[in-house]
Length: 125
Image (cartoon, rainbow, N blue to C red):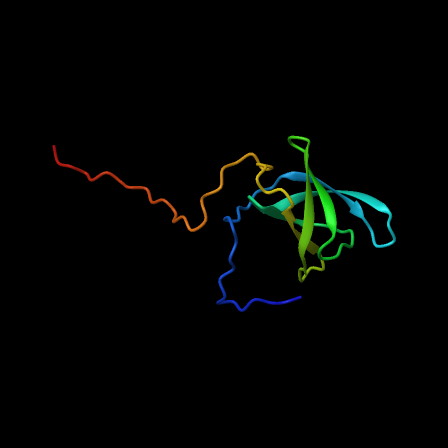
């Protein structure tokens, strides 16, 4: 597992959004037994998600993610596994077909700057 220096900017294809969505993760354990786990997303982007998972998975492993709000499923690949200080395992996945709008939301274009609200000047009458 590689660690990023705190000054290194993480580069993503789309911005990450903190969004809690109930998910079902379907996959196979190392001996080949099928598992189905219920969890919630911690953060999402157009190309994947990060979520807590108790089952042991390995980087590169294929899993199926089911959005419990829409019952839509998507095949994914595990790209990162991180253990938090509390011992929980967090798994990052990327969609194998990212052109599908799995989260049913619009993400900003890569490199887009945040919009700033322009407050009207208080004009004297």
